[in-house]
Image 1 (cartoon, rainbow, N blue to C red):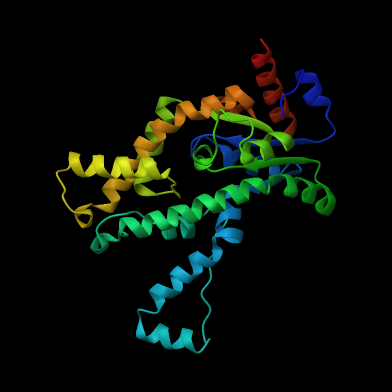
Image 2 (tube, rainbow, N blue to C red; image 1 turned 30 degrees about the vertical axis):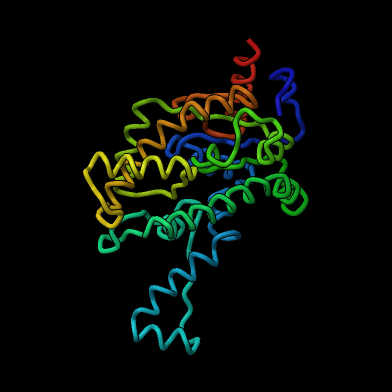
Length: 288
């Protein structure tokens, strides 16, 4: 959804914006702020972890519980209930399910199982993003929200072709929302990698990229067998490689179908009106 002028955007009776960019640049922080100012907050990751992968996540919890005799008997007699308590700000159940490949003794998954869960996530993410138009109407008709923000995960760029206007996800998003890239700095990227080592977020690799980086990591560390890979070490190394690969594609998506703001500029936003002004500035910048 591109506008002829910033004024056309500002004067629209309803506003719908999809924010994207690397994790940690402020997408969820912004959406939470706007929620306090009568904006509907749609979290793609929350939708993935509840509607589309919730059963996978809970079944994984149950499979682990079944390994404990005491819990196994309680589960088999429906005496206890195990559920996922995923929230907009706590995606640990989804991260835990996706896991990391490597040595099972260090909490890793066989590569084939990791790839199977990655494909589940790809299908779920596409579905969650294609749900955005429905939720815009739902937010308006059911709850009376005229302003809407879609808070997407860092892996949005992995499930779209940023150069293809006919890509199903891009068509769904651009037909109903303004695409806004929140661009971080090199320092932001470095901090994100350090943060990831202590608190991993859900990760999705395109299949060919995963295979390529898996082989590269094993070669660099002189490892012959998949089971020798330290899952934590590969997770951090792979995340950094993935982040570098994504950055130019984020920009390509913004250049083709949306607008760009700097992550540092979000610090000036205190309410919905100031956010709209920030977007209007991005529209003017693109028109120049």
